[in-house]
Amino acid sequence: MIFKSKSHQKKFKQIVLKSLSKNNNIISATIVGSLNSNKKEIGDIDIVLVSKTINKNYINKVNKTIKQIELKKYFSNPNYKILINNSFGPIKYDFKKYVIFHLMYYDIEAHKNHVIKSPFTCYDWERSKNYIGKRLKEIYPVGKIYLEDFLKSRRSISEYIKILNSQSIVQKIYSFNKKIYKIKRKKIKLNETQIIEVCHHIIKFLTINLIKFEYQKNINPTKETIKNYIKKINKENLKTYNNLENFRKSKNINLLDVIKFTRNYLKNFKSYIRNINNNSKNIYFFRHANTGVKNKFIGSRSDIDIVQKKSKIPLKIKPDLVFSSKLKRSIQTAKMFYKKIKSNKLLDEMDYGACDGMIINQALKKFSYLEKSWKNKKDPKFPNGENFENVKKRVSIFLKKLKKMNFKNSYVFTHNNIIKALFCNLTGLKINNYHLIKINFLNYIHIRFYNNKFNLSVSRKIYYKCF
Image (tube, rainbow, N blue to C red; front, side, top):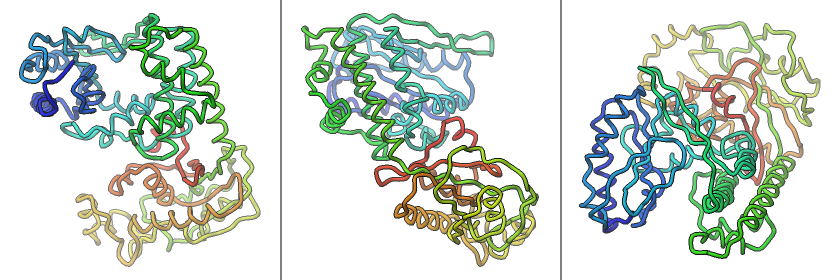
């Protein structure tokens, strides 16, 4: 599908989003995929729609809105017709005849589940600047790419191996029964051309996601960077990959060679991930044991005891170093398990100032500016105390000190707001959203130090529970 010009493409994106903005059920509509590339020639027009509810009537209304868009003004071919793909799986159409709208529908819970199961895809979507309503990361953020994503998510190494073995993919589509919907799955066998394309996709996007992990940024790497990483992982020349990249033009490419190259790449990629794991420092941040105090601001000025005397560490990893805050509840928790402990004031709970020890409702009534500021998405300091930004800075200083220390595994016994600050520092979560994070007593968060960077290292299910 080819646009008349870049300006026509820009106007087309605006018209599409303006048309969708009239639907009150839509919370977010985001253009993703090749339409964001600003190239005149594109593939499908991929749009992610997050709505309050999902039902057949809503989908039909959106489809009808899209079908009313006039194509002649924007595309080079005046005879193009609109064709809508409402599935979640790839289907190939005739781009010479149709402008293909790939509309992907989610309600909020479905979007959350998609982030958990397909973080690579959703992270890519979050980069889009063409949207109406809320940005996708405002609804539920991916955070960053974690090492575990390469092993446990969709588009993981093992899933790609399954696709290669079966030479098929799964297409998903909504099925409605009155107001209830479910997802139907259909297995589609791939032909030779599609297998070659899938192999290219596997190598290219695994590599891009690895680059995002190592840089800890949501970037779109250059072709040169991608090829350098492929060579680094595979330790072979790029001839086969270059043929893959141009498979539509290449008539002499051998399917068996392509599959063999891709299998070998996956094997080497897995070794590369294993090597990262083996060469990382691991820090496990634990929230202290239960103090029995509820509905009060208990900060660094309240040096209270724990009530939970017996417990087990939910990890079998032996630490080389054990840290705690200077507060009794943290030290007592650490000493339930270990004798040698290094205490550090940087790990103390937030200083709630004059609010420390007060019942929360009474404190907020007395110091009403706190709640007003929070509602305005500000980060106020507690009276004669700290704000959340102060805690984040303390956490950053502690992490810098850890960088210089010699250990393989370390345990840190600390407090609720310290761990929340870690989340914000390592995922890019905005300060005004830190209250959404929930860390239970004796729960832990795993931090990995690799390539001179700290990154969160949790399964997506644990990440989901923390919010």
